[in-house]
Image 1 (tube, rainbow over the protein chains, first blue to last red):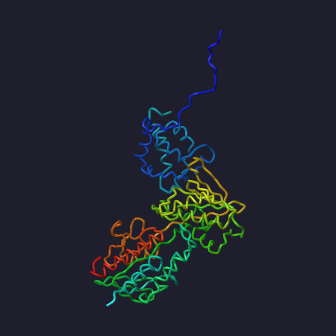
Image 2: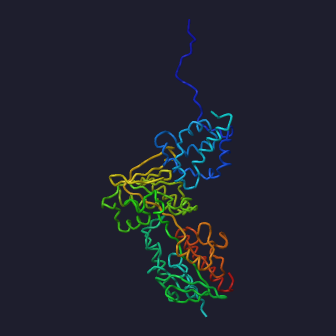
Image 3: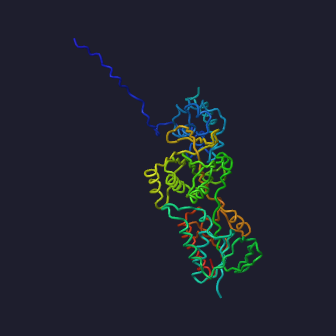
Length: 119
Length: 342
């Protein structure tokens, strides 16, 4: 008798990489916008990430973190936030005067306050 | 009786204004603080986007302004500025008093003082130079490091003193991007073995033939463009420079050793302009440049009737724009002198 056992070809369904802007939750971003309006001023120059103590040793980009918060990609942000040591060098180099350090602090606060994301 | 106009500043705008006014039969006193006219134009090697020699434009301006109707006062600054009915009384540092029917301010710009961005090490590390320093090296056809050797890797940092809140300049100087592209090409031309890297936040190629020059830099000269603002430069033990930047398109921090670093200094309101704004009561904007009464329709008019602006004392401009702006100032003055109203 022929066996109907499925052959395993090694295929699997991968998670999409697309940002689903409409269904993403941007409450974290809005929390920061309200309390640190300079958050809106980022022009993605990457000065913060260039000088970042953490980013030079682990996979962490503060610039990317800001963008992901704004897009509502909260899950990865939640993890990444823990890496920041709040040294504040990013704030010193920012040509737009974004209080980048405070953005991280507020993001942490927002996650703590949210039922969905709190630890 | 002939009308008399005082033109303050003998750079591109001042020479154009003086030349055109004198051709219209108006007497001109052209005041220049340096010993010769030409301003910044004297310092440039070739001009973007077509890389013609800057001396050709200077020759044009000299021809235009060689006119008996122009009295040139060099090494002269302005110490007094008064309005008396329809006349202006201007006092120079040499005690000379000039009576003018109208005044054109053409005090131009100063380059951003790059030492203010301490993190880039200008004035601290030997091989960190400015775009103006590089022009001088081009003119001598000698791009060498302080120890006399030829640089192999050269980094160009855009937006030094522009779009930077930390130095109080929110605005874009708009010409540094294309200057960087021009200089990158010229480095490659003079040093074919070299590698050139431009570090930019945005490439602002908004001028005729700028984008084409950018493409040529990539295609023909192999200039590398990395999107990211350099956060700091430091010197290594072997006299090289290390820079830190985020390669924002790769999303990764990047560090690189370079032999030479060129800082694209932005444009600021000149010190001379600031002084005249103070003594003349002329209004300046948030960017510290002179503020015209209407940016669209009266970009030459000041808040004082009979005082007009020409060129980069109002905003960063290239030479083409400066000459056009100077000519429109001439029209405004002629109109004003005709009916006494501005």
